[in-house]
Image (cartoon, rainbow, N blue to C red; front, side, top):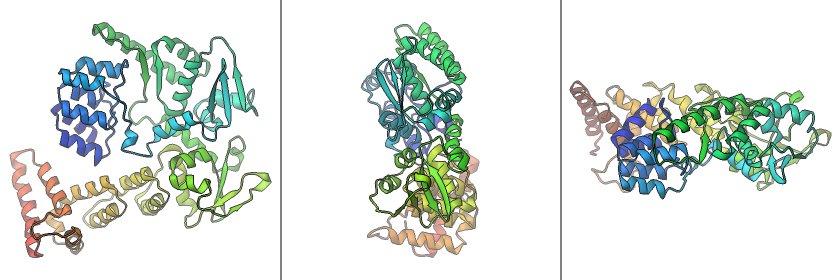
Length: 464
């Protein structure tokens, strides 16, 4: 629903609504519809310059000489929009989400932190991680366990292996995304066949066909870079990475990977330093020994074990799967415990997952309590969902003591509040009541809700 709303708002040029959807509802800025179009494309096509500038500043992708970039440029309704697109400097979505998963995986590849194998392709080195390659590709898993087993450097001299295409292939394995110059597409297709990456091969063929049709129908356009992106909500990358979390649990699957033991309540998890260090500032500091946590020698000469206190194995399992795959199945019952741990371990993405789980159980009895939790842990989207639900049932909430206390506390929390200053909770409820009015028949119902809220404010001596 939010995604559809985003596309409609971009066609209308409603900057306020788009800002709300991206910043409060966490809608992905580069999401695609069934026509493979992005919000930025519709904003350009409909001539909304202010919205175009906002989207570019918040992570909308529009690289020159790519299919998306040329499509936006060709479809732009005005010269100022075309100039904005040409002046575009990429701002990734990680500017809004500092733990954005794909950005982490891209950095893991580029920086090679804790890499355990180097591929040298015609003299050019590529640092990589056996665990990632093995989880993402059956071909690499087999080669690393046979021909390349025990090798820290693998030299590839075959004349048909292009270093540029090999680098693009690694990018795909790590992120699910691939950027390749059109002159190297055939090299990349050949590598995809060799590595049995049939999904990539299919995506390359489909993208080539789409770009050819676009260029043929739009004279003057020039696409020099081919970009493959996973479709929205594509689970393949995260499911593959979740295999690494599986390997942290059964001992018989741990031997082939570079690991680090975590111990809690008598249970040991063999984890990859690169993932925990890259995903959390807390674990980075812990592994860099900033906290001087006591370390116990590992068994059989392995790495020392780090003991984590105040967390059960069941809760840590959720942290484990989130760190590797950016996802974990959370029931509302366990979400509160995971939320507290996620806040301590500096994992804002996991906090958002907890928020989504808690949003599923909103009712008249729980909404105020969940709203308080959302404010405490700074979960803007969950807080907004709570106030949206409050707006729907405000006539019943005004009779509840917990809601009345929440309104009083919000009023008292406004620094140096004057008698007629606004109250954030009340303002948010009013906003959602008003936003539901789309027909004349809904006006009266909205007015009744607002009157119930106003009557409450008068009864407790607040004017806002």
